[in-house]
Amino acid sequence: MISACFFAVLLQHPASPVRRSVGSASLRDLLGGLAMGLTAITIIYSRLGMRSGAHMNPVVTLTFYRLKKVRGWDAIFYAMSQFAGGVAGTALAFVLLRMALAHREVNFAVTQPTASGELVAFIAEAFISFLMMSVVLRFSNHPKLSRYTGIAAGVLVTLFITFEGKLSGMSMNPARSFGTAAVSMEWYGLWIYFTAPLLGMLAAAENFVKTKGIHAVICAKLNHGGTARCIFHCGYARQQAPSRAISAQGASHRVPLSQSIG
Image (cartoon, rainbow, N blue to C red; front, side, top):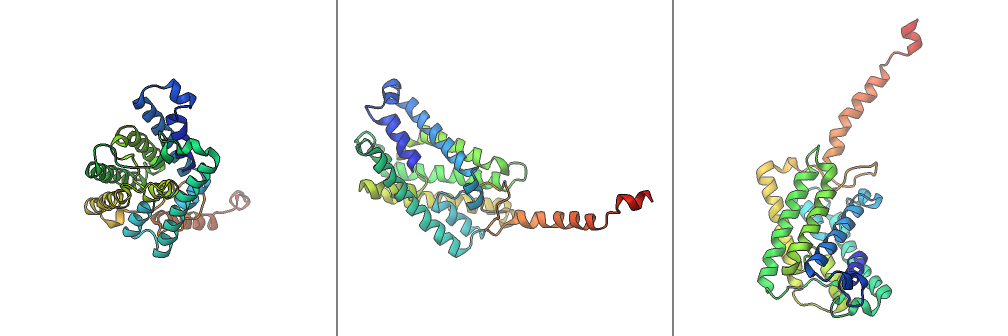
């Protein structure tokens, strides 16, 4: 949220040198998309992201709970943390940026339906949420593609902000939308960002299970790299256990070099 608020001021505030230099609104949307896409990629591949699974979105957590990869209590505390982080990040950005964040051209980086209306915003949010979860599931559950899940998600964030943001403000995340709404007290259209992403991502999960089967869902982590312990119902850990056991067994039966020479 700090990143979203900072780049909103940088790109939209009339006094910002970037806003003055970049006259095209479409180009500013692209720059904002790149900034947030890179932010998502950085978080996913960070040490904290590798440890937590990089769930920044309660709908992502709930979807993986539906797919039986997240325990109930973990899902509850993840969601509480995500909403708390959304509010705290926006509040801290307000402390740092002050009235620049509250300027009408920035408006706390809130996500609200545009002139196209609430129905269009709802459909757009559901659609991009469906696409995002479909891509995440296909990448994260493919042995050769799983390491690129974060990059794929970041690219989609860039594209969605650049092109879909004109319809709904591009959220996909109720915690993100609630955080800015709670600090700005701008509640218009908030129901969209609680319902449309949920429907879109759950629909993507149902479609994946229907076509691939529930056993094709391996883990809830967006990045399984590194050595951080996985707290989810992890299929990767079960896949790696036999190979580690075979390696250990082979090591125990290895003949010492001195004996083989003797």
